[in-house]
Each structure stands twice: as C-alpha cells, then as structure tokens.
Length: 284
Image: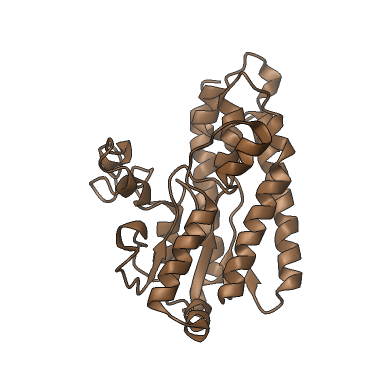
C-alpha cells in the first residue's frame, strides 16, 4: 500500500494528458471557438466557491499552498496549479476562464465563464431529503444552469443572439456527479452500495442538463466522465482496507474503480442517446 499515492498521482497525470491531447486533436486545430462555458465541481471551479465563502470563514482554497506552483498565489482553485479546464482553454488559445459568480450581474464574459462550484452535486438536494432523509446542503447543477441563463439573457438577449453566441462556444459539462456519491463513501455508518441505486438518476440529470444547453443553442458539448476514484488519495485514506485483494496491482481500490466504470458506462449510453436525438450537435 506504500506506493498507492504514487500510482494514483501517475494515474491522474495520465488522465490529464490524454484529456488535453484528445481535446487538442479533436477540437483545438479548428480555431472555431470564441469562448468556453463550463459547469461542474471542484475539478473545474476557478474561484466561485472561494468568492461565495470569502467572509464566513474564508475558504481554505484562498490560502497557500493552493496556487503555489503556477499562479504563485491562491486563486480559488482546488489545486496547487492549473485545473484541467485551464489546459483546455490554453489548448484552444483562449484566456483562462473567470469564475462567473463575482461578475454574474455585470460581467460581459467575452471569452466565456466558469459556473462550476466546489462541492457541487448533479441532483437537487431535495432528491436526497425525499429519498434518503438526509440534508446535503450543496450547490447543484440546477443553480449553475439558472445562473448561466441569467448571464446569457444579459450578454446575448433574445433567442437568435443566444443561439449565435453558443454556436461559437465550447460547453464543458462537468465533470459533475462525483459529489452525489461521496456521502456513502465516507460515512461508514451507511453501506456504500447505496450509491449504486441512484447512478441512473445522476446520469439522467447530467443528460437533461446537456440537452438544456443544446436547446439554448450549444453546438459542441464536452461531457467528461468520472475519474478512477479508487486511485485518488482521499478515497484510499478514507477507505483503507487490510484485505490485500481489495487492491489492484497499482494499489488502487477495486470497488471504487468499478463504481466509476459503472457511472461512466451509463454516461456513455446517455451520450449515445443524446447524439441520436441531436444530429446537428457534436457531443464528446
């Protein structure tokens, strides 16, 4: 188990490299995107959560060591440097995405905006209260999409203007959904298998959100899947096992990686369905 952190770091680095290469190869050469709009959670948030929580008390994301390796100061990113969305923007020759919330009412966002919020969930919190009787007080996808529509109504008023603006934009929809499951993964008084029950509902909400931005006029939508979370240090430390067969050859937890694969397989099926329903839209 001593090498698990090293293997997890390698795994995530490989994912990042391949994600950027895929985007660069598939989209980067066209030079056809004037802006990016993104949604998601801490994987994508470039400062919204830090802004929301700046006074009560300030977010840990607002102090070192966050931001130390690239920006040389905290920027509200859950990273010591750039996020995947930053590499996407740079691969497409665009400025790094600003967080939307600080300028939601006034910003012009000429090259796009980031609506992602640290800790956000795909499903509405009322889902968890009504079905499992617990309160998950998090920002959710509904709120991000509502904010997106407000911004669009201001910077591109009218259906024609909105559709024109979005046709020239890349929409990055996620990663989101991982936080919907985490309650069951870290509260060991409940069975983690419970999370499997509502994977289809998480996927359906993601799919409905993608369809929503398509209906608004988006022509290119990138929908990232979940990570191999069994290789991520926080899952490894929070779910330590003394049974060697719970780990794969890389020191990753098999159950959690199988869970991610289940989520991603259903997401692929949802994307296939969306493609068939929207033949003029590129969904990646």
